[in-house]
Amino acid sequence: MGDKPIWEQIGSSFIQHYYQLFDNDRTQLGAIYIDASCLTWEGQQFQGKTAIVEKLSSLPIQKIQHSITAQDHQPTPDSCIISMAVGQLKVDEDPIMGFHQMFLLKNINDAWVCTNDMFRLALHNFG
Image 1 (cartoon, rainbow, N blue to C red):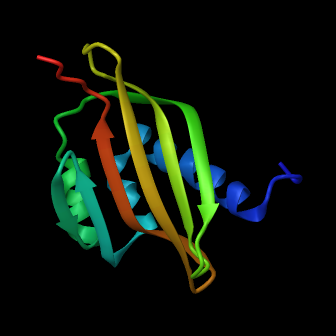
Image 2: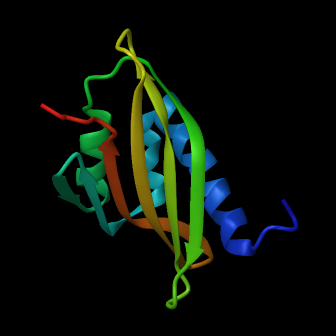
């Protein structure tokens, strides 16, 4: 990992941490958001740590497992990091579904937090 640019190292570590928390205890995700954070979940908008954690904790999911198949990271001109995860998720007994998620990470007081988060299932309606 040492030969990767720092933004890729930070982004990869964040992705691993995020999905570990999401799969095991979504209530702990509040640690990565701030009061100014925004989440767009399947087109629904939520702002603030409390609203985001309430949304993610209230999803009708008993068991979930994410599998990341690709991730990309870029530095931004204002010293943030944009991270995109593509993968599959398995919820309860439902079929495996694809998803895309994008995060904007910002370093505040020597901690990387998520200021923006956008999630979509990769569902296609060709009908």
